[in-house]
Length: 178
Image (cartoon, rainbow, N blue to C red; front, side, top):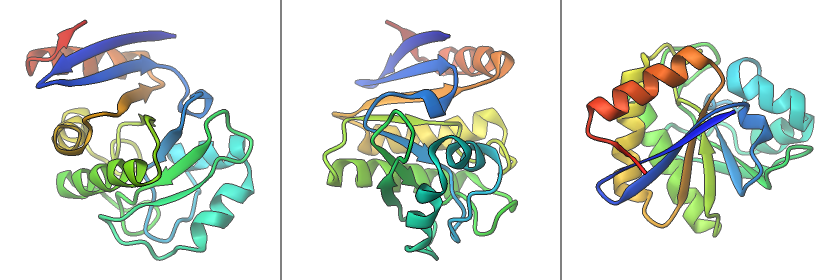
């Protein structure tokens, strides 16, 4: 597992190569759909490892519009909560910069409301949602800069190539290793 801290504009983000379902902190973020169906991608991995209870709790809040988020327990996961922040309307549909920005911001606000400090994100909207790495991280960083102060933020990716590309891109945007 590789991990690197980067900083810019008084925001620190850990970039980690690993499995988000192994995060041992306050919460992981599920880039959900508005119906809270946890079928594929990160959502499917969370449900497989953490159990059906996570999806069952989330569905009680469906439909959840893009721009809002829901906190559930984490079932059998190491973290304590899952924050479900819709990046797409329906399972398998496409995301956008604006949807990822709204979802990330909603997740951060929900974390603060619940007193959560350490929050791990995947690249929101970049898998099933179809966004490029750059689009996803730009939208996430915009939300981090607005609402991430005081939180321990982490982006976890599972692919070594994506990890390298993400670090290279962030450094090109002025992020500095610390």
